[in-house]
Image (tube, rainbow over all chains, first blue to last red; front, side, top):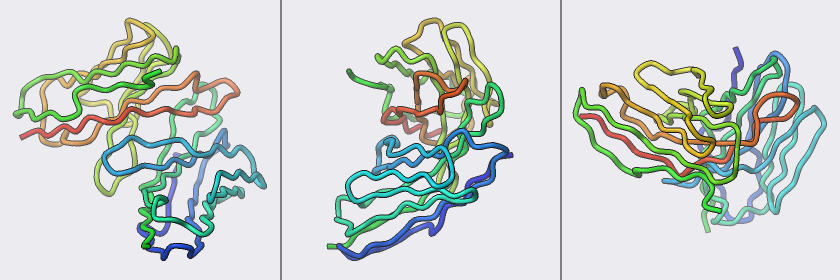
Length: 112
Length: 116
């Protein structure tokens, strides 16, 4: 059974204070690891897909990295508009497997 | 493109009532799915479909029914609502989820359901 654990549950940062969110996972074989952003009252919005250990992807102030056991979402010099809940999910590589297993998310608050 | 459209956004039901949550996408996506999101829990898959006429169960299918008669639409039916089905429901779609590709989902805005 695939499992995803995100930490911390909540994180408060001052504007400009860089930090990282963690996503630990177990999966039989990884087809993809996903990061989503979710704003209150809205659906999750896709950020990144990572496929193999060592891979990195960047988008504005966000950079996602991947090892064989965990992924990090690094936030550099965050702004208040980066406040949201960040969700991590994995998809295994079993034949015909479509299902994503999601973590509970990290709620990020960036204080001006 | 409107993306994934869900209706209604809010609904209050009494225990035992039935209703249908609507989901439509205009991206010609093969794969569609329904998730529920509850406080303190991750998104959980209810049902999914890989194309018109094909549906399958996810992690938490009990109490829900789906059908896929067209590529665009994937309604979720609650047959006899229970308080445990109080939740926020998300419809999500993608080009395809299996084969060699990863299942990159596009989500709708959600439907908040309260069962009294």
